Image (cartoon, rainbow, N blue to C red; front, side):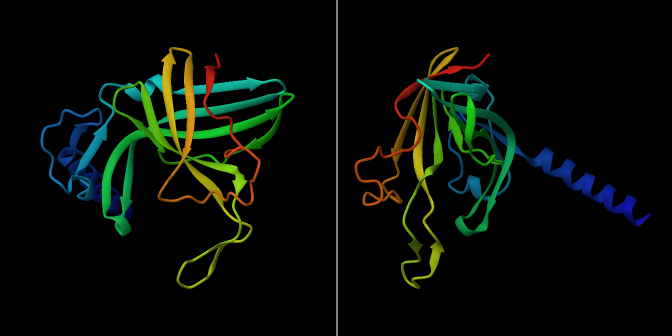
Length: 206
């Protein structure tokens, strides 16, 4: 009896929340929004124009015996709720996973993302971030406490811009975050900045 009652209460709360949700177009054109709209939990940045769909799928770049694949998947109504940075809203987006092959043998597979890392306003440029797990920095310490955060270093965080060229091709571009430059020049002297291919064209896998 108690379980049924609790289930009913939960269902009613969900219905009330859905009815009170304010949908805004993530492509823009929403007029003047409250300055704290993304802190209230009442707003949903929805991909009304289905611009994200342009990027969904598996895309690959082949260079001799090496192959790089990135899998882009659409996420619907993901709840971003982080009190530390005062964010509380819902959004659509794209999550990613990438794979590296040598002679068609899988040699690396990045962790599966469960949250969106990319968004788009126009369906042509997809903006977001990627972790380059093949580029590990030196030991990372907390600035004030000198506490070791990553033994052996952490992966490099890179900005990523994906441009839709055609229905079956995208341009893939990486660049370092200026405000979080955890790439270490000493460690990778003489090597490319990223272990991932950069400024390359990827073709959609059927």
